[in-house]
Amino acid sequence: MTGQGQGRIQCGSTDIAVEVRAVNNRHLKLSLRTSDGLGVLEPQIEAVVRGALRRGSLQLNVQATGGALQSDYRLQASVIEGYWNQCQEIGQRLNIAQTVTWGDLLALPGTVIDPRGQGERKAPSEELARATLAAVQQALDSLNAMRLAEGESMGVELSRQLENLRAIVNLIEERAPQVVAEYRTRLTTKLTAALAEIDGHLPEGDVVREVLLMADKADIREEIVRLRSHFSQFEQLLGAAESPGRKLDFLIQELFRETNTIGSKANDADVAQRVVDMKTTIEQMRELVQNVE
Image 1: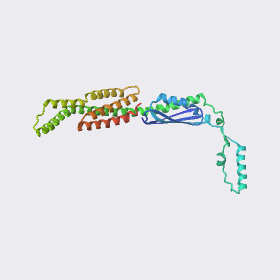
Image 2 (image 1 turned 90 degrees about the horizontal axis):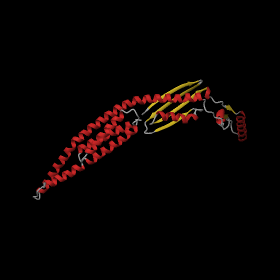
Image 3 (image 1 turned 30 degrees about the vertical axis):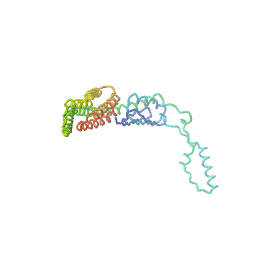
Image 4 (image 1 turned 90 degrees about the vertical axis):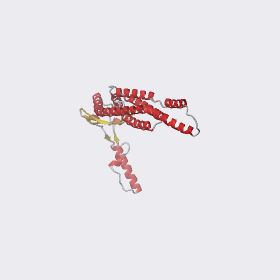
């Protein structure tokens, strides 16, 4: 399910702000960005996320500002002076106008030193680490609250579509005997007309055998029974407290399979149209189910 959430905690002089955005995905994918000084917490942050969510493509941004994370940046005066002198010397020698700026100098290697980048990078304090993880959890709780509200609406829509499928299956079941009867009528009419041209007799037993063979090939009773069983399981999963997403995925695949079988068996335009309607509804359900954990 789509959604977003925020978390914010003040830890001493450090302000921790977390924002998470989620879009639909069958699996859990996490894109994590942390501010300087919090990178060492990324494995713990990911563990918190995986404990709260099972599906979705997430973008998680964890930012901390304030005294505890301020870097003791230092300008290397001797290095800057060396660069400047070389620029002056080369400029005079080649008769090039001096256009070097502070920005140019500070972009050169070694002009600015951050002690944390010199192999002395320290993990945040235990208090700051706890506060950061708490802010992440706060953002995830906010996201889940939004997703829960969306999930309730989604459950109502899935139930409505399930009832639509049930109604279509009932119509197909009612139509099935008529398909066989109409086939017998068409077959008898064609054979009678053909035999009349040669003054032949139409054996009733042959017609019955042909109709029975067709009826056996077009028998969809087992598919209908399985579809109704899947409907019941689907309905139970919608009301389950546990995460039913993957089970619903499986049932959607089974609904497609049984519906395709009915379409291939039924040699009838009306049933074929009903099958198209079912596939359309199941596809809509499949898109919704991808959002369910």
